[in-house]
Length: 424
Ligand SMILES: C[S@@+](CC[C@H](N)C(=O)[O-])C[C@H]1O[C@@H](n2cnc3c(N)ncnc32)[C@H](O)[C@@H]1O
Image 1: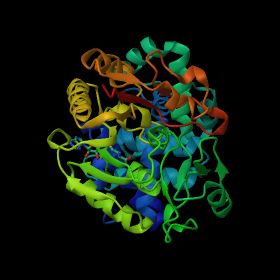
Image 2: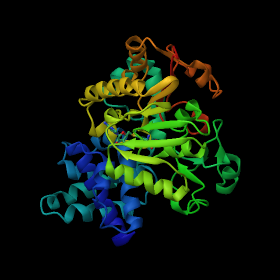
Image 3: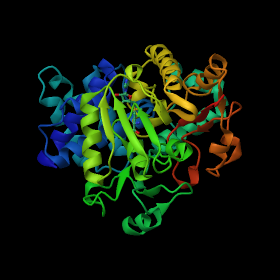
Image 4: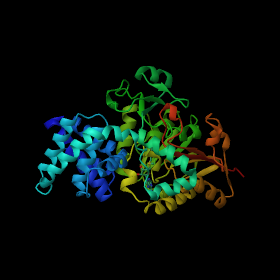
């Protein structure tokens, strides 16, 4: 790390300022190139530091409160939060405090606060680590906690919050042989065939990356295609396909898949993924609602709140406030209706979202069944996965939560259901 870590930490503070001050998502910021001027090590470090700080934000604030008489300006506060998380997670006091004071000194506006930063962080270095361990797992903000508590109870939300705080391992989907892949990468084979390795590994250095033997995909995100069970020769439409994790699963089964997404940039990534793995799919940059044709089976991985991915994206609860979810929910319903019109009689539609909100899962399916008398739910498709039966929902879908498989390292939150269009 350059300049004893000042560059990476400064960039991490910038990311925090943008997420917490401007409501920007880390993926947008990084996709927009804000870390591009850093070398690869500093870039990875900046990103990791910002994510760790967002994960532990509530704990950092509680510790800092004890040493601050009033809240400092946001960017100084973020320097302190970042340093507190580092110090409480075993960072060497001397390096962390010095780097923080340097960052504050480099800016004319914050320069006068360097004495405060130095004094507060010395206290945190002495007392913080012990206090950190005694604090609860950070809570979700009210706008998200309240609806989740309604759906899963306060114990359920508490378990999810602990899973969010624990972070996520790295899951891989094998192109052909999961057991061989587990041996190749020294990972664990999960009950549904995904292979789990420790987080923090550089993906492109794992064996089999260059030869395209696998791709990164959370175990929960791999299940919708397992439920779809694509068959060789079937004509399958993958709606909202980019960056293509599910497209590759369908292509690997031997089915003829057409991948559709309205984002050119994300579609470019889907094509790069197909090239790396040597898998074949037709691709279309198009709005789902403009697609036509008749298909044997359709996967609809609809745009959603992404609240199931908070383990890996702890910025989301801080950057969002739920105000744009209503629009997403009505778009999901329109997409389901259009997908049903594209299904051959007897065909199947798997609807899924990486959301924890029932409005984007269970309710969508209940309402779709009311609107379409020719649709029914295929419960067998879910039972075939052999998961805990209590994960099946009343209407016959599958509800996955980040606190499930906690002994194995958890999974993303997801909802999925298989719908069949009656043939008469
Ligand atoms: C959950 S992501 C898809 C993830 C993907 N299925 C995978 O497994 O890698 C949702 C996608 O929907 C796309 N999308 C959003 N609105 C769309 C629309 N109206 N038509 C087509 N694609 C859309 C987004 O660009 C995004 O790539």
